[in-house]
Length: 388
Image 1 (cartoon, one colour):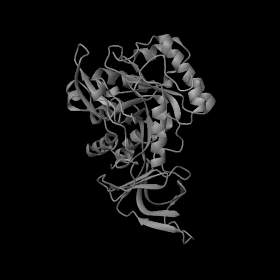
Image 2 (cartoon, one colour):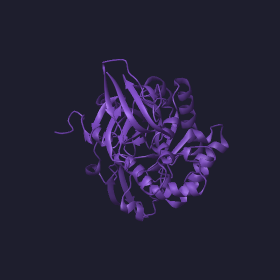
Image 3 (cartoon, rainbow, N blue to C red):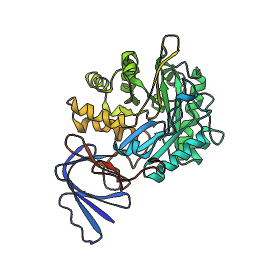
Image 4 (cartoon, helix red, strand yellow):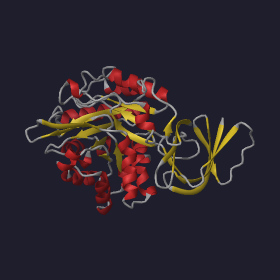
């Protein structure tokens, strides 16, 4: 069935004005003014007064759940389809975190496949916080070459008391194997790095780049808005040509302990002349959001949400930032960095991942690869046992 979406204000993510969009079989077939379709096998949707955005791309979500820093009862739940779809997120990258014992890569891949059957596009990182890197096939490069969903390593931890306290040599070996595996498989081969609040910050990444042949761009560090000090380190990292990632999920305890809210972090980046194309946002959805005191003792724990990605976009727009300027932070920037070439943009030949909203950012419809997931703001598809 051909679907013609008429008279939308198109953000691709750049602003393209009033357009018609034709899509079928999961792909965008045509974009233009007053498109004519010589077929009875099509439906038309009037998008007048509404804006069309690319489906959001989330480079970090704990799709199988995470946490456990407070014991078994604090393990967070796994994702459901509507955790993402109701908030315009159509592409996610799943990861393990602190726990790679009760949370496994086998479970991660199975959950990714299940969410794909539900209608999303889901990829994964191999490994977890820990070193040596846990893999499915015995090596990082084998995982990248032989498992379709795996596109890199993550979320390996540095500057964190929960990490393995990696040396320069150890991290360089991880990055080298990931780099070669990515080259041979045609994937990003990125090392997605969890950065804690330890005193080292991003220093270890710079040391690898300075002491080896691994470029800084091999690393994609997240949680850069964890503190003002780390944020400033991140700005230097981005100005050197590498990507940084801000975390959208937060809680008041994290903000009280020094985390920088996304709106403030983005505004500071603009003021510091950091290229916004070098910044993405991720949700850290379904992860635990622990708060530790100075002795490393857990004092609070909440759960991240995939919804925070779209909510942060809305907050940026509400703060007066131009939608076309900040939309790449949640769409094309992560897609480009992760070599998800069909994602993050609305153009002929791209996947029909689309979000139709009102001018004040209320979501009306969401399509993932042309499949309608949300209509009139309500879910029309669910995970198998989501409503039990």
